[in-house]
Length: 417
Image 1 (cartoon, rainbow, N blue to C red):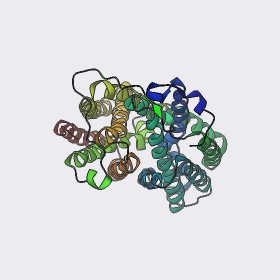
Image 2: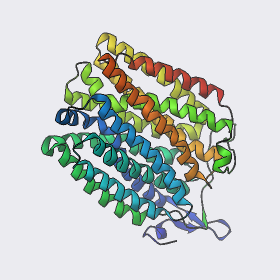
Image 3: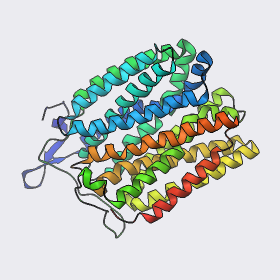
Image 4: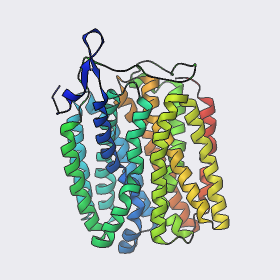
């Protein structure tokens, strides 16, 4: 295992001659949080929708499709990471991710048509983000077998909060340099940051001893053992969970993919609409962090059921906001949607480990990522089509209501790995 400069800080004498891991491993968590923060910028796509539509005259469903394609190739990147993990270390995956994201943003800055945008931003950026996402997450979890929920939450909080942290920066770039200039700056940032990170992100060396996990309550953690991908997809537990992931993802991506224009349709000024999009991002990150802690303490069932029930409440709040014109209710609906989606995405990361083990984690997680591919179409794209046909977002609360009810039903049905 190559020494990346942190190895000497992460081991101490342990039992039976093994080295005990120390608090210095949190350096990896901090680096992972930063990297996931930049990857989460894909959630700020709605910032680019208005200027692109103004320049090219594209419809809302046209620009929403770019986000759907991006999330589709995000899933392809997840699968590629699983295949790559069987043949090499994490470093090649992160390098390919850096090159793909950098090239995608740069080519997007040069596009003059929908196909160019779909291939560059949707294809290359989405693939690079998905490849880096799975590679980073599977590597970081190996450093924290005693705290899978919390550490997954920390990592994924960065992904969820990316739009909040960097969305205003992108808005400023668009104002200063136009959307083309903004894409050029992002191309350079992503390429440099991830190429540098590829030197530091490595799995723990063999022989390390980790603290025993702590868990409140009488019931032991759910475990399905070490399960191979072909066996996993045959299990009823996976099929139910896959359906739950589609429902929760679709509900969340409805608002994430349309946050700015939906808020603007309710009379919210553009600057405040961008801020409301940041509210989703903030609570998305908070839901991942809080969901991770809750998963470790209370288990999978509590988190899944809370997320599904929260989605129903989101639909009600959104409906009331549309009826009353209340910006406070709209902000509440946005925030709760982010919270529920964050908790659901956190579940994905930890359930794949607890249900099916770490040995095939990267590949199994990549297969689950196909649910995100489906959700990216059933959510934002169909909402864009409904908006184009009706001229309003009036159908959005009802879509979220159906998805939330289905998610809660599945959460009550799924009882064991």
